[in-house]
Length: 77
Image (cartoon, rainbow, N blue to C red):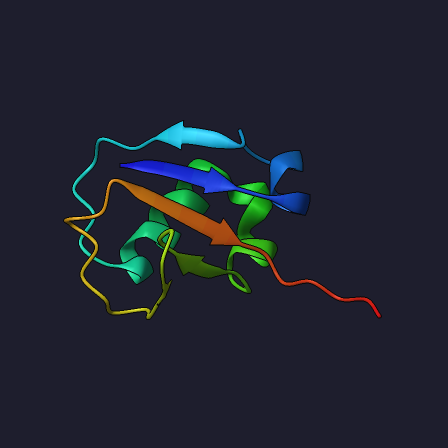
């Protein structure tokens, strides 16, 4: 599974990474990313996750997705 991150997350981790561990859902993916990049914990806890077509829920099965996008919160006007 490839994981892509954007914006402020790129200060804490590569913009693209490959994960070869067994990850079943978004909650598990978030935990793996926090363990791998602990400095990004605060941002990761506020992120949404998606495929190229849909936003994923915390418990959604992701075993069949090749690409996951991590979308940090944004603000502005």
